[in-house]
Image: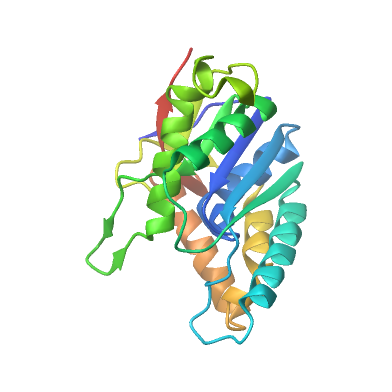
Length: 235
Protein backbone atom coordinates (compact mmCIF):
# COMPACT_ATOMS: atom_id res chain seq x y z
CA UNK A 1 0.00 0.00 0.00
CA UNK A 2 1.37 3.40 -1.03
CA UNK A 3 0.42 7.02 -0.39
CA UNK A 4 -1.35 8.45 -3.43
CA UNK A 5 0.78 11.02 -5.23
CA UNK A 6 -1.24 12.91 -7.82
CA UNK A 7 -1.74 16.58 -8.64
CA UNK A 8 -4.49 16.53 -11.25
CA UNK A 9 -5.80 19.63 -12.96
CA UNK A 10 -9.28 18.22 -13.56
CA UNK A 11 -11.07 15.42 -11.68
CA UNK A 12 -14.40 13.78 -12.43
CA UNK A 13 -16.11 11.64 -9.79
CA UNK A 14 -18.94 9.40 -11.03
CA UNK A 15 -21.20 7.66 -8.51
CA UNK A 16 -24.63 6.08 -8.32
CA UNK A 17 -26.43 7.93 -5.52
CA UNK A 18 -26.38 11.51 -4.19
CA UNK A 19 -24.37 10.64 -1.04
CA UNK A 20 -22.02 7.99 -2.47
CA UNK A 21 -19.13 10.25 -3.47
CA UNK A 22 -19.03 11.97 -0.07
CA UNK A 23 -18.84 8.69 1.84
CA UNK A 24 -16.34 7.04 -0.53
CA UNK A 25 -14.09 9.89 -1.63
CA UNK A 26 -15.27 13.15 -0.10
CA UNK A 27 -11.99 13.86 1.65
CA UNK A 28 -9.99 13.38 -1.53
CA UNK A 29 -12.35 15.51 -3.61
CA UNK A 30 -12.36 18.30 -1.01
CA UNK A 31 -8.58 18.19 -0.62
CA UNK A 32 -8.00 18.53 -4.34
CA UNK A 33 -10.60 21.31 -4.59
CA UNK A 34 -8.79 23.21 -1.84
CA UNK A 35 -5.54 22.79 -3.78
CA UNK A 36 -7.03 24.37 -6.91
CA UNK A 37 -8.09 21.31 -8.88
CA UNK A 38 -11.28 21.59 -10.93
CA UNK A 39 -13.42 18.87 -9.36
CA UNK A 40 -16.70 17.74 -10.90
CA UNK A 41 -19.26 15.19 -9.71
CA UNK A 42 -21.78 13.20 -11.74
CA UNK A 43 -24.48 11.17 -9.98
CA UNK A 44 -26.48 8.71 -12.04
CA UNK A 45 -29.51 7.98 -9.83
CA UNK A 46 -32.21 10.32 -8.55
CA UNK A 47 -32.22 8.97 -5.00
CA UNK A 48 -35.97 8.35 -5.15
CA UNK A 49 -35.79 4.98 -3.37
CA UNK A 50 -33.15 5.88 -0.81
CA UNK A 51 -35.27 5.44 2.33
CA UNK A 52 -35.96 2.63 4.80
CA UNK A 53 -39.55 3.79 5.17
CA UNK A 54 -42.54 4.26 2.89
CA UNK A 55 -43.10 7.64 1.24
CA UNK A 56 -46.23 8.85 -0.49
CA UNK A 57 -44.38 10.84 -3.16
CA UNK A 58 -40.97 9.65 -4.37
CA UNK A 59 -40.58 12.89 -6.35
CA UNK A 60 -40.48 14.77 -3.05
CA UNK A 61 -37.72 12.48 -1.76
CA UNK A 62 -35.68 12.82 -4.96
CA UNK A 63 -36.10 16.60 -4.71
CA UNK A 64 -34.75 16.57 -1.16
CA UNK A 65 -31.81 14.49 -2.28
CA UNK A 66 -31.03 16.85 -5.17
CA UNK A 67 -30.92 19.72 -2.67
CA UNK A 68 -28.67 17.68 -0.39
CA UNK A 69 -26.38 16.86 -3.31
CA UNK A 70 -25.97 20.55 -4.13
CA UNK A 71 -25.31 21.38 -0.47
CA UNK A 72 -22.69 18.65 -0.14
CA UNK A 73 -20.99 19.72 -3.36
CA UNK A 74 -20.75 23.26 -2.02
CA UNK A 75 -19.23 22.04 1.24
CA UNK A 76 -16.55 20.12 -0.69
CA UNK A 77 -15.86 23.06 -3.01
CA UNK A 78 -16.78 21.24 -6.22
CA UNK A 79 -17.09 23.11 -9.50
CA UNK A 80 -20.20 21.20 -10.53
CA UNK A 81 -22.56 18.45 -9.42
CA UNK A 82 -24.80 16.88 -12.05
CA UNK A 83 -27.61 14.38 -11.46
CA UNK A 84 -28.51 12.34 -14.54
CA UNK A 85 -31.88 11.34 -13.08
CA UNK A 86 -31.94 7.58 -13.56
CA UNK A 87 -34.39 5.91 -11.20
CA UNK A 88 -32.83 4.14 -8.22
CA UNK A 89 -32.46 0.43 -8.92
CA UNK A 90 -32.91 0.85 -12.67
CA UNK A 91 -29.49 2.09 -13.80
CA UNK A 92 -27.43 -0.37 -15.85
CA UNK A 93 -24.24 -0.58 -17.84
CA UNK A 94 -26.19 0.08 -21.01
CA UNK A 95 -25.25 1.65 -24.31
CA UNK A 96 -27.30 4.69 -23.33
CA UNK A 97 -25.47 5.17 -20.03
CA UNK A 98 -22.04 4.57 -21.56
CA UNK A 99 -22.72 7.10 -24.32
CA UNK A 100 -23.79 9.71 -21.76
CA UNK A 101 -20.71 9.11 -19.63
CA UNK A 102 -18.41 9.23 -22.63
CA UNK A 103 -19.93 12.56 -23.59
CA UNK A 104 -19.36 13.94 -20.10
CA UNK A 105 -15.78 12.68 -19.99
CA UNK A 106 -15.06 14.24 -23.38
CA UNK A 107 -16.65 17.52 -22.30
CA UNK A 108 -15.00 17.80 -18.87
CA UNK A 109 -11.72 16.15 -19.99
CA UNK A 110 -10.51 14.95 -16.58
CA UNK A 111 -7.02 13.72 -15.76
CA UNK A 112 -8.47 11.49 -13.05
CA UNK A 113 -11.82 9.69 -12.83
CA UNK A 114 -13.01 8.36 -9.47
CA UNK A 115 -15.75 5.72 -9.32
CA UNK A 116 -16.89 2.68 -7.32
CA UNK A 117 -15.04 -0.60 -7.83
CA UNK A 118 -17.61 -2.89 -9.49
CA UNK A 119 -15.68 -6.05 -8.64
CA UNK A 120 -16.33 -5.54 -4.91
CA UNK A 121 -19.51 -7.48 -4.14
CA UNK A 122 -19.39 -9.13 -0.70
CA UNK A 123 -18.08 -7.24 2.34
CA UNK A 124 -17.25 -9.28 5.41
CA UNK A 125 -20.29 -11.48 5.22
CA UNK A 126 -22.55 -8.63 6.29
CA UNK A 127 -23.08 -6.48 3.20
CA UNK A 128 -23.78 -7.02 -0.48
CA UNK A 129 -22.68 -4.10 -2.62
CA UNK A 130 -25.64 -2.27 -4.13
CA UNK A 131 -26.46 -3.18 -7.73
CA UNK A 132 -26.50 0.53 -8.69
CA UNK A 133 -22.92 0.83 -7.41
CA UNK A 134 -21.77 -2.17 -9.41
CA UNK A 135 -23.52 -1.14 -12.63
CA UNK A 136 -22.20 2.41 -12.32
CA UNK A 137 -18.67 1.11 -11.78
CA UNK A 138 -18.81 -1.14 -14.85
CA UNK A 139 -20.25 1.65 -16.98
CA UNK A 140 -17.46 4.01 -15.89
CA UNK A 141 -14.77 1.42 -16.63
CA UNK A 142 -16.18 0.77 -20.10
CA UNK A 143 -16.60 4.49 -20.78
CA UNK A 144 -12.99 5.22 -19.81
CA UNK A 145 -11.32 2.10 -21.19
CA UNK A 146 -11.45 2.40 -24.07
CA UNK A 147 -14.53 4.27 -25.33
CA UNK A 148 -13.81 7.91 -24.39
CA UNK A 149 -10.28 7.69 -25.78
CA UNK A 150 -11.22 6.24 -29.17
CA UNK A 151 -12.95 8.52 -31.67
CA UNK A 152 -15.00 5.81 -33.38
CA UNK A 153 -16.88 5.10 -30.14
CA UNK A 154 -19.86 7.45 -29.86
CA UNK A 155 -18.44 9.91 -32.42
CA UNK A 156 -21.27 12.41 -31.86
CA UNK A 157 -20.34 12.94 -28.19
CA UNK A 158 -17.23 15.05 -28.74
CA UNK A 159 -13.50 14.85 -29.32
CA UNK A 160 -11.82 11.74 -27.92
CA UNK A 161 -10.16 12.08 -24.51
CA UNK A 162 -7.80 9.71 -22.70
CA UNK A 163 -8.30 9.58 -18.93
CA UNK A 164 -4.89 9.17 -17.32
CA UNK A 165 -5.85 7.53 -14.03
CA UNK A 166 -8.81 5.68 -12.57
CA UNK A 167 -9.27 5.55 -8.81
CA UNK A 168 -11.78 2.94 -7.65
CA UNK A 169 -13.26 3.37 -4.18
CA UNK A 170 -14.80 0.71 -1.97
CA UNK A 171 -12.33 -1.78 -3.38
CA UNK A 172 -11.42 -5.10 -1.82
CA UNK A 173 -7.99 -4.66 -3.42
CA UNK A 174 -6.91 -1.09 -2.62
CA UNK A 175 -3.29 -0.22 -3.32
CA UNK A 176 -3.09 3.54 -2.62
CA UNK A 177 -4.27 5.81 0.18
CA UNK A 178 -4.95 9.51 -0.32
CA UNK A 179 -3.96 11.92 2.44
CA UNK A 180 -7.19 13.69 3.38
CA UNK A 181 -6.00 15.48 6.50
CA UNK A 182 -6.93 18.89 5.12
CA UNK A 183 -10.19 17.68 3.58
CA UNK A 184 -11.61 15.40 6.25
CA UNK A 185 -13.76 18.08 7.91
CA UNK A 186 -15.27 18.95 4.53
CA UNK A 187 -15.94 15.22 4.05
CA UNK A 188 -17.78 15.11 7.37
CA UNK A 189 -19.77 18.21 6.45
CA UNK A 190 -20.69 16.77 3.07
CA UNK A 191 -21.87 13.48 4.57
CA UNK A 192 -23.95 15.36 7.14
CA UNK A 193 -25.53 17.42 4.36
CA UNK A 194 -27.53 14.31 3.40
CA UNK A 195 -29.97 14.62 6.27
CA UNK A 196 -32.56 12.34 4.67
CA UNK A 197 -30.11 9.45 5.10
CA UNK A 198 -28.98 10.05 8.68
CA UNK A 199 -31.97 9.56 11.02
CA UNK A 200 -30.72 12.52 13.06
CA UNK A 201 -27.62 10.68 14.33
CA UNK A 202 -25.25 13.55 13.60
CA UNK A 203 -22.69 12.98 16.36
CA UNK A 204 -22.38 9.24 15.78
CA UNK A 205 -22.18 9.64 12.00
CA UNK A 206 -19.40 12.19 12.41
CA UNK A 207 -17.40 9.78 14.56
CA UNK A 208 -17.95 6.89 12.12
CA UNK A 209 -16.67 9.00 9.21
CA UNK A 210 -13.60 10.11 11.16
CA UNK A 211 -12.84 6.62 12.45
CA UNK A 212 -12.99 5.09 8.99
CA UNK A 213 -10.66 7.81 7.71
CA UNK A 214 -8.30 7.10 10.60
CA UNK A 215 -8.29 3.39 9.80
CA UNK A 216 -7.52 4.01 6.13
CA UNK A 217 -4.78 6.49 6.97
CA UNK A 218 -3.15 4.19 9.52
CA UNK A 219 -2.32 1.74 6.72
CA UNK A 220 0.35 4.16 5.46
CA UNK A 221 1.10 6.26 8.53
CA UNK A 222 -1.37 9.09 7.84
CA UNK A 223 -3.77 10.63 10.35
CA UNK A 224 -6.68 10.47 7.89
CA UNK A 225 -6.92 8.71 4.55
CA UNK A 226 -9.14 7.24 1.83
CA UNK A 227 -8.16 4.04 0.05
CA UNK A 228 -8.46 3.34 -3.67
CA UNK A 229 -7.51 0.84 -6.32
CA UNK A 230 -5.39 2.74 -8.85
CA UNK A 231 -5.36 2.02 -12.57
CA UNK A 232 -3.08 4.06 -14.82
CA UNK A 233 -4.48 4.19 -18.33
CA UNK A 234 -1.90 6.63 -19.70
CA UNK A 235 1.41 7.98 -18.45
